[in-house]
Amino acid sequence: LEDRSDQMSLLALQGPKAIDVLQEVCDYPVQEIPYYEFVMGTVAGEEDILISATGYTGSGGFELYMDNRSVVKLWNALLLAGESKGILPAGLGARDSLRLEKNYALYGQELTEKISPLEAGLGWITKFSTEFVGKKALLELKESGLEKRLIAFEVLEKAIPRTNYPLYDENEQEIGWVTSGIQSPSLSKGIGMGYVKTGFHKIGTIVLVGIRKKKVKAVVVKKPFV
Image (cartoon, rainbow, N blue to C red; front, side):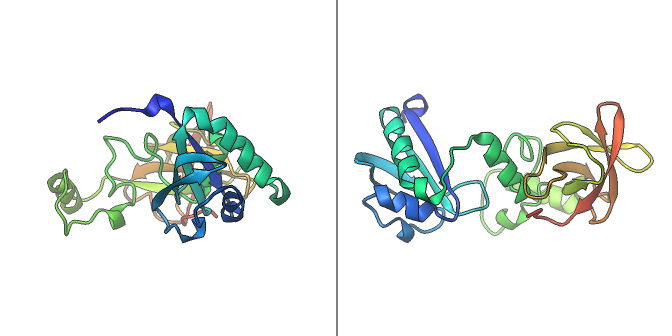
């Protein structure tokens, strides 16, 4: 195996018009690429581009992987092809707000080496009918009961939750922490995800978010936000 990470670039073309934009500069019928599959193709005259029907924004789109030497040419070609369709460049901050509004877990925040997929609400992709590394430990956890659960919450006051802010119950006893939080562009309010002790994860439960020296009221809501 050869680690080529430093020689590779990634562009994510996301949104409802992504197929139309990409097709203008691509030789492959991109609408035929199944969701979460990929092909190799030529984009903007550059060969051997990996075209993947994936993304982490909650909208359809593609992720394009290429050698570093091709990235500027593809960037300019995509912006030109999408100019009439309202394309705009965006960074990872935009991706993070979009995935959070859809309650997509992000590794390093909602998922870590110390957080199981069961606690993260990802039991639906943890198939105990197959063999995998860690199966025994997860079965034991499932049988013994989960001590913490991942919640989605909306802040009821004018405030923005941030990663690692503490979460409290109504008696101001600490019950967990915020894993991700933003001022939602779609909802114009503070939203977040976080872990709380089992029992405080039910929809409608009031929790308090520790923001600096204040404890701000929030409510557990149904996923996704949008």
